[in-house]
Length: 191
Length: 191
DNA sequence: ACTGTTTGACTGGTCAATCAATAAAACGCT
DNA sequence: AGCGTTTTATTGATTGACCAGTCAAACAGT
Image (tube, rainbow over all chains, first blue to last red; front, side):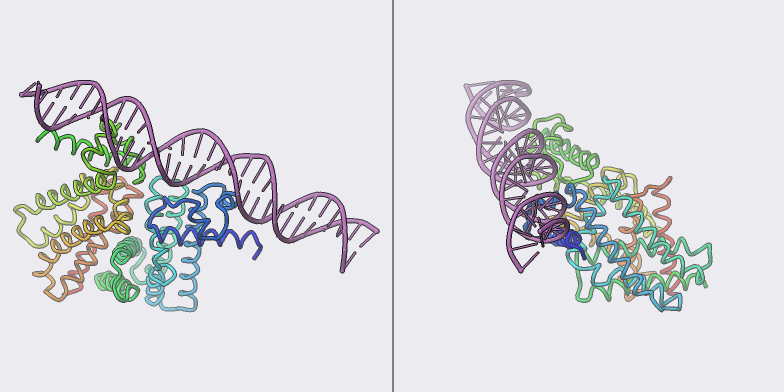
């Protein structure tokens, strides 16, 4: 990894960490730079302005989520198991850490006013929807799959929110269990 | 309504409006006061500081939501219809306007760091959960009702989020329809 | 004149962004 | 290997704007 790339990820990780620590996007570039052990000016040098630093951080998180999903799907054959893998990946440790949760929350709010953030959110939605429909279609048919996928995707977001605010003992287990229960209901209702 | 109360609601409504317009909690008291047609100092006089102004605004929204639910339930007898009323109320016009959606989004983020906001969020969660379980119990039994209620509540939040970002032609209709479909699946799966 | 309401002016502090100056590499040359 | 030169990485200092919160004075209703 080149020196520049190293600095960039260093700053991105500091950003995510700092958003987690303060719970808000109104973190100062100074705080972020301090956490990264560099001067504030360097952050501007590498990212231009604060917004782009945030967006780069969010892209970082989305990439990592995408990798998790791909890894979880790798080699899994049965449609039902693949759906379960997609669902569990949403609550995997790397997407469910304190800092990343805080970033996601703020990202959702940002998507309301920043076109670029909204574009990223659309990408996430589309990926999730397509991951779900691909393996739902054989189980639920072309007509039923999209509706089920929408509900499951929304449920993932909703459950994520709940556990984000009030973590239980084994958040990953319980969160996934709820979504999987809903999935079973959807499939059972078809029969 | 007393003069003080009038001023307070005037400022609260300006706050909600301004949050909707900017999409963020980092609205200045100056902007809010301007929208309300008063001097910024008056906002401080009535609410002490910015945080309390925002929390009062959120309490205002939650009260209005509570009134909507109560009104929707009034006189409805069948358990199934009552559940439907609760669900529809979550997407009723007064809770689904642009400004209120923006306030909700920011409220969720705030609940991560403000104890008072978290307390309010717990109240909302509890009310929704109890509204759902009350009429689910006769249909799903004491064992099944709480789990179903949690999934439906999370789905309401998740669907709310989706339609908040990407409103469709008839958001209220479609949003409710998805949740009602999930409810039907849950009940069908029991049989 | 009295009481509660409202305001204008002010303050201390904060922050994003800029830029000229410095330190550190990278390179070419002998 | 040593040395001077060019390029790149990094910083300190600064600026201009903005903002939450205070307070004493002005105002309105009775």
